[in-house]
Length: 164
Image (cartoon, rainbow, N blue to C red):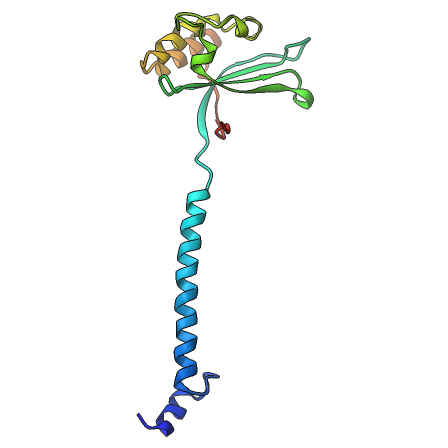
């Protein structure tokens, strides 16, 4: 290609010659590689999707530990129980592995959680938690028992995963 033809092809592009055009294309290609790498890194760092919890207790305000809110993320032995105690302005709580909510033999409630379960009248839930820890899918049973006691299905809410 003649230099005169090059000049006409590059006219209006703001590029003075072919070497400058090649450099510009290399920069664009490198930028695209960097963007692809960055997008991959961002995908790795995205937070995992929130977990779905069944709200099995929510008490009215009152003296400590009220209000009490308890929710269960049913996932077999990896299930999580979330607790919120006290008024929202100063509540305490968090997510606890199901294995810690059950006693050492995994056949009943860990005594450390007696106060919360009594305040929320949740002793009906303990047999379901034992079966859940054993690997049974008891979600439908929890929903049915809650519906029988309250006349409606439990509320569900999405909660972010706790950091270990």
